[in-house]
Every structure is written in C-alpha cells, then in structure tokens.
Image 1 (cartoon, rainbow, N blue to C red):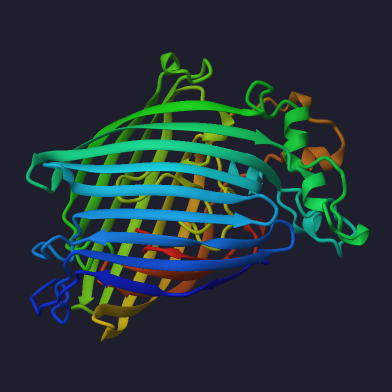
Image 2: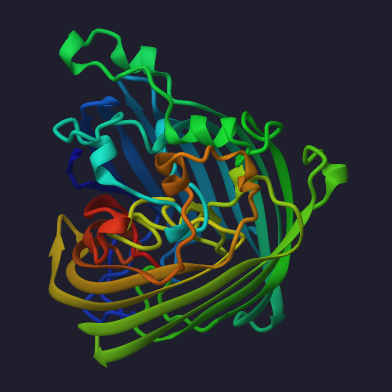
Length: 443
C-alpha cells in the first residue's frame, strides 16, 4: 500500500492583480509568471521510498486572456530507492507559433513493477491470493507485474478550420519501450530473508514462455505514430469547464517505414466530453465517453495499453487507474479495441483569495467504467493443459469494469489543480481500491 503526502506551494512573479469580470467573477486577473509545485513523498514495500516534485509554471502575459494562459510548462522529477522514476517535461501554448497550438512532451518513465494482468479484460484471470503472502495460494507480490523503461517524445499541433472552436489536429509521437520481467534480485537487495520475494515465474514470464507474448516483442521495441484529426471545442475554461463540448477524432498511423520493428497498424480514437452548469460558478456535471480501436495491421502488445487524447491531456496507460477508470487496477482492461466513460459531479464549496492568489476547493463524486470491445488475438496452443495454467487465460465473457468514488481538488488561479481521488472497484476481479494524488481534473 502506498502512502502519498502532498504539500501545496505557490508564488507569483510580477503577478499584479486587478478585479475583473472573468469566468469566476470573484477572481482577480493574473499577470506574468505564476508557479505551482507539489513536493511528493511515497512509500511502497517493494519499490521503496518515492521522492521528488511536480512543478507547473504558467505565464498569463498582460492578463487580458485570463484565466487562459499564454504558456504552460510542466516538470516532474521523482525517484524511488529501488530505481523507478519519472522524468517528464511538457509544454503547451497557443502563442509560440501564432495561430497554432503547440503541445510537446519529453518523458523518460522507468517502472520496476508495472501492472500486467494479461489481455482482453475478464478473459485474463485475476486472483489477489497469488499476491497475498498470508494465502496458501501465494506465488509472489510481483506476480502481476513486469518491468518497463519507456522513452516518449511527442509534438502535437492544432490550428483553426472555422474559428477557434473547430480545429485540425496533427502530431508525431515516438515511443521506445524496453520490457522484461521484474528484477527480483534488485528488489530483494538489503531485505531480510523472510521479506524477500521468491524467485519464481511471474505472469509475464509465463506469457512469454507460452507464446502469448510473441518472442520478438517480449523485450519491447520502437513505435513512431503519425496523428491526424479534428477537434471541436466550446469549453469556457479548460481546467474545469462549467459549460461546453470537447470532442476529438484522431487517426493514428504507425507505418513500417518509420522503423516500427516491421509492424504497422492504424487506430482511431474518438472522445466526446460535455459539461453542464447546475448552479452558476458552484456546481457542474461532466461526462466523457471514448472509443479507441484498431483499424488495420498488427499492434505490438506493448502498445495496447495506451489511451490517446488531444492537448492538454497526455497519452496515458490504461484502462484502469488514476486517469481512466478509477478504483480499477491500472492496465486491467487491455485489448485491440476498448470503450470507456466517466460521470462526475463537481461542487466548488469554498472560494477565497489567499496570498493574492485565487483559490477554490471542489468536491467531486464519480462513476467510471470501461471494457474491451475487440480482443487482442493470441495463440493459446502453447498454454499447458494443467488447471492452473488454463485458468490464467480463461475463456470468459467480457463485461463492464466499474469503479466509483469521490475526490477533492485544490485549485489556484483556475489552472493549477491538485487532485486527490479515491475510487473503489465494483468487482473483486478488478482489485479493491485506489488512492490517486496528482494534478488536474480528469477531463
């Protein structure tokens, strides 16, 4: 179980304020540079202590467009004592190139114990006893994990077709995934014998041995995506809209001539979000529904989990976890095609001016869900005939994976958002619960 502590820090540079009529009438105009930061400390018995910081820097220029920013720069640096880490920079602006929104990312993400539950949702059997040291069925705390080092470089662009609401979208994204089994020796280093992980085959190892993961993909590979599409956006405020629509249609192409390890494929991602004001400046309702599917070709297994959005959202691991289906285990829902959705009620229950910064607190209640709608095809002929092995890749009907919960958000100057969400899975086959502390509303 992880414990995460967050502190809320902020200061402004040349951030003079004047009362104005903005999306929230009590707000003051923000000018110049404003900085928000979240120091992070976490602990997990397998990955060790996590430490680092999140920093989001906004430039509001002369304040004439507030609460919209001119430039957003996001930095994250975090480490654990067992070697996992996040090194990430993102940039978002409509002013770097006049008339073009530029969103860029450079990330190096290392995971000692990335969640891996197999393919096709409930077709892959999950038993928490395999991870429970107190159970007679215990195998390893790392049974449903693998190791991954992911390098991602991305540049996305948006420009107007008719006004700012209807826009074209184009981009390029490079991913280099290096995969393998969990480094048990490294995780056991320095532990007493009774606390050490057993040296045994994990689910990932079995999938490789049985041919469910192709041998030429087991160690990962390179994927370069070309993206194109359209966006329709009428939101009043990006960070937490009180009204409007945000819909995007993306086509993602991974041609073999771009060095995609002789694999080529195309995908489509259609996402619709809508926002309703129930009480002006206080209460709003938001929902999101997204369908993402393979159109042609063969996808490498290591590209299956990713969920695609347009700026300012990032490419995410999914489905399940902090940014897609809260309460359900991360990467629990993995297949060629998937559908997911979210319903969320948001209540701004406190608004104040603190240290010359516009602050509000918001509570939320949510219901999230997702499911595989098109299976990733695997050859099961190599799976041993014993009952245990056959159970791990059972033939089971897929159904909706659901999570529900609540959250609290601390928001400064409309854009810097600390989010704390707690969700519970509604089916024990999806885990128990998740506590998520990070930045921004989900959508």
